[in-house]
Length: 261
Image (cartoon, rainbow, N blue to C red; front, side, top):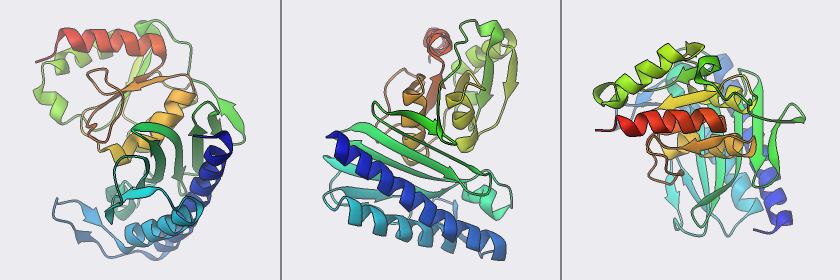
């Protein structure tokens, strides 16, 4: 993708995230009714209106791109240029009045993620990144930590329900024992912390690509490594995450590989 087109697309994604933030903050203040979707997950008018606001701006900026959104599905083809949108990732947190939810917008070009915007309006953070352009937070570039020893590493877990039934659960336990500390920041939060050098490893076994596509670009452009638990790069079918500072990611992947079912 040409640099000027990528820059324009990133600007549009940031504008779209800001528009979604207005919708989300409006409903955060007034409250919403909750519906339960067919997959037993909640959805609100905030999710739907935020995605509509995002789609409007993305279509205007890059009309040739398809859009795959959490609430309205796929509009267009999966190959070529594809926007990946989760307008309100963390609806359960939103309805329970906790600030750990965000808007996630990423752009994929022929299967490769090339930009990402992660906006958490109530939490008060927005991060963004583009291929070759670095990761940005509060007007400055950020970098993952240089941690190289598991004994000094900080690990965070998100949704690991599936992992508890896997042989790799024991490997995670050993890593936790060998690490400096364990936390469970979850959602966008631990990826932001990883990209800013405040964490060294994130482990999740139950995700959707819409949850993490933008965060994958942000971590990667901050110098981190972002794969699934098998070490594969993110795709539309990705369901797990192993993300970290390069040396710690390599050690974690080796430990998980030795304990795979």
